[in-house]
Image 1 (tube, protein in one colour):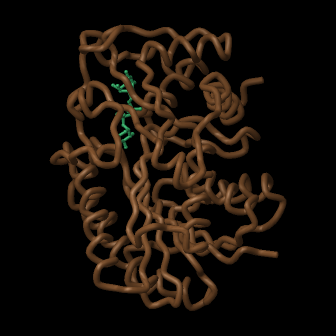
Image 2 (tube, protein in one colour):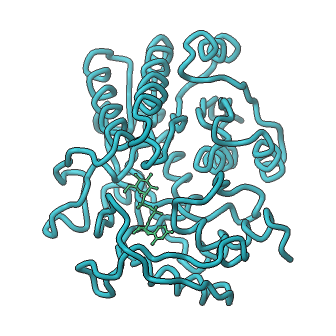
Image 3 (cartoon, protein in one colour):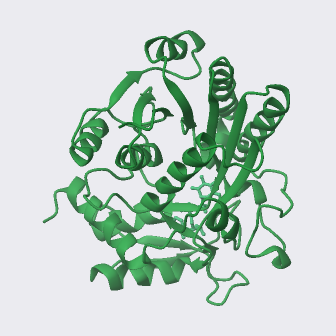
Length: 345
Ligand code: UFG
């Protein structure tokens, strides 16, 4: 029997698609919404192949209140929403902040208004560790109580503003429950290699750049900086497997629908608890796949945080969830996905 219907905005995106798979496997029905601004309809076929059934889908832009509202007219049984739909390129947000304020804030406001009109109004919000900026050394690993820093980019500011909007709405509207999930660095692809991350153009993120270099699409990887105050001089991040991350969303929905949340507004860090440097990650990729990745040391990238990794103990304890896929398996999944989309045997 179904555990109920979950609305997934940004359902054909990278994390959205993996989350639909985990929700379906956990016994939920889904209605996915996307406007394909940064994804493509083929993703639905990938999801359907994995789960062995159709996904209910409506093409709509969440910033368009009218179009988005039609989803709620058609599906009157929505019990919770997971809100992924947002623009997410840090650099682009500096060049075009209005795109970010329009897309990210307007879609959240519309979703919250539509949800609060429902009997059950539980929202899981995609937030980011970017809200912590560079934590002081005594705050590493970073827990949910670490002080937030002024955002480095309009993208980061939208994540902070969306969290604030949701906190205010929970105070004002008694039927609303929210879980904000602060992701560290999601990487990898579903183990079937049927869905994964589809960067458009030159990838800005590390793992797609590594896999494209391994595939011969890029000549070499630039490691942005080896003179940071870290053991090998390169930046440190907490890389979390996208399918582990997706499972945390299921746990968050289960918790709210089961009335096990201790507050109507909760925040969780989602990471592994282990920091890894850029050079360690590149080496782990070569070890896991046996494929060489040529790289050069380049200058620092503007706006990069030196080091940040999660204290995920609150999520481990309260959500009963842990990111425990070994990094070699995660990197291999990214490589298998790259091979599939590049037609490499
Ligand atoms: N890096 C390289 N070479 C590359 C790409 C990245 O050395 O070609 C390095 C970066 O300098 C950084 C690390 O790899 O040290 C990770 O970079 P990513 O771009 O993959 O990830 P970020 O940590 O910069 O950004 C991610 C998300 C953002 C989010 C941010 C929060 O992509 O959306 O985490 O900290 F805002």
